[in-house]
Image 1: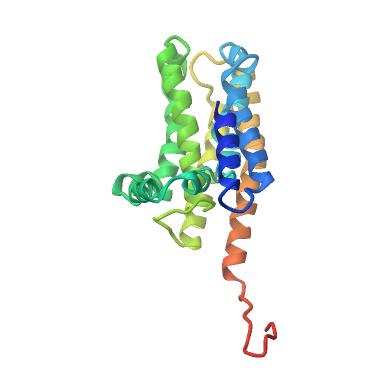
Image 2: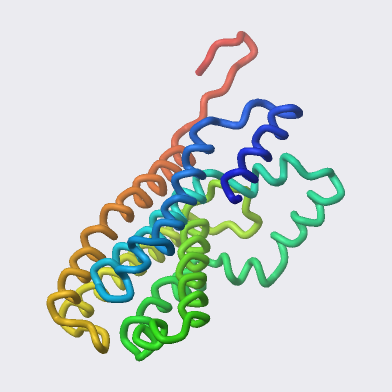
Length: 242
């Protein structure tokens, strides 16, 4: 449904605006598939018994899917399809104080990385396998926190509360360090009920697999910073490009 709705919005948008880029469709489709892969079989079934499979699901749901979905610019596409009245209402909501708090880089980092520390260093990881509702809440939190973190670092959609590149770079470095430390902690101190060999394999997947996705995030962040900082060309009165 998420894929179909996005495709429909893209087709409707093309009737009134310039063509919506094909690559954004691709990002959205693969982002949805990445999130779905973590919560359906075979990964979902294996995750109940194997911590390694659980960690693969974490990378798909909490890191890769949020990055791909953010690059699809869903809020921009939605704004293109709304009428002026509703677009203004949505704009006011995005400028509201609660949204500003949740999209603040520090708050988003705490929700994202801090939530993982709580999950893997307490009894929450064990409890979620016995209570389906709790498991659903944890999965939803991992996805939403990952998405909020991603859009707080790289700006693809219009965002009202913007912060400097230096500030976001500091938050990014600290959050990546906290994620790496957690993966090493899991390697040395497995969550309750997780065999040591599974914890070590899961910790390595979280560390090295997370690094690959984080490299993509770092590349996009630095690319935006470079584009914002480079001198802009202008056209003088003789129409010569300087």
